[in-house]
Length: 108
Length: 123
Image 1 (cartoon, one colour):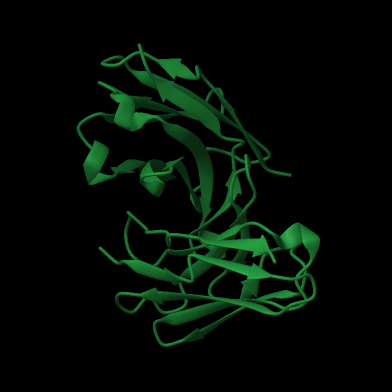
Image 2 (spheres, rainbow over the protein chains, first blue to last red; image 1 turned 90 degrees about the vertical axis):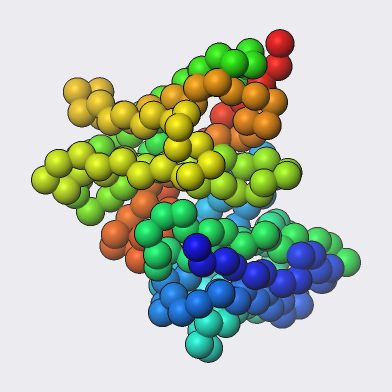
């Protein structure tokens, strides 16, 4: 199975900050990497698919990139509604398609 | 717009069968570019994929090795929904259960999710 290592597990940031979350795959997954946002008591919400494609309705301050097996989610100018937990997930292999452990973005 | 609506009990006794249903609106359970998944989340296991059903000329099912002997996922085309049954549950199965659509047009991402059902296994 392909394993996903996400970092950091948590971070503190202020409104307006630029935030970067990384995810490393244990083997090649091409661009089959997705990012989700989850708020307390809610289901995860797809933000980015195919490493860098923005899901419909998601603000453009969210972006994704890839370098080999390393993937990055960037939030430029963090907004109050962005405080949440973020997960990466690979969708390259046959199931199970692992999620990362999550990154909790908290208010500094 | 596509929506998934989950239903089922929030409390199940140990050794019994957990049963949940996910009703689909705005899409079809038999569309051949989508798969219909069950995923659960707990503090100890994080987000854990359980299984899926999908149609491409015929029906297929996949399931996680950890629950393979206990899980049944069934589509119902007449009601346009799919269901999860997990037998012989233990307290380890306590989690929030989600249904989710896997979209081929989104690189197999889970683009639509149900609202979640908190299931507690307790006597």
